[in-house]
Length: 240
Image 1 (cartoon, rainbow, N blue to C red):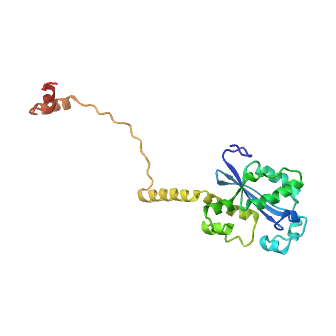
Image 2: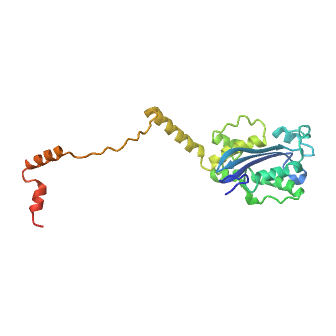
Image 3: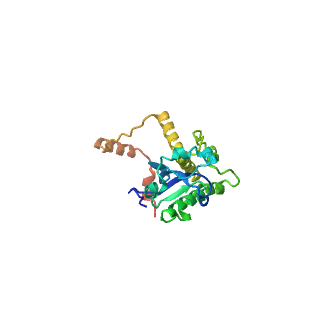
């Protein structure tokens, strides 16, 4: 598969948003988008991050979640100004989102207002649903996943789209089976080998030629002559 940047591999986008509320139909808007690129489930150095002027009030309960006030956001671009850059970044890659229905609903509302086609439901992989399938009955929040996989989320005093995307990228890899554990075991094995045997360098030698001399042939014949009734002679004399 060819990604939008000309590289090879399976490209996915970890995505998170922050909003002014819970329902775009009630006039709530997106105030932050954070995206990280994965190639073959490994984060690259490419990311997309924008604060967005919602052009509306930001309720206190929303500010308590992400810390973004209307005054703080008033100097940021509106969604229409960043929509093209955002769509170019995600391209046609699969979106990995925690509680995907929420984020896709907001994104599609904003895109529809600008005349862009919506994201299809199958474009988004929901890590909340992945968590509930893998750990039925267990908490499925991002903080709960970080605790389960010992991922440091101590910096998450407030929600932030880019920070949450970074944490989700680590959790997503663990939900897929834990690539990091396999890498850690390989590093540990290499460390033990080096500590035990040191750096070992293979030395290539020219093959030796072993030629039997005349003296060695004569000595062998003399020794065989001393043998009484050797087995190979009896085998030759025995009837078939």
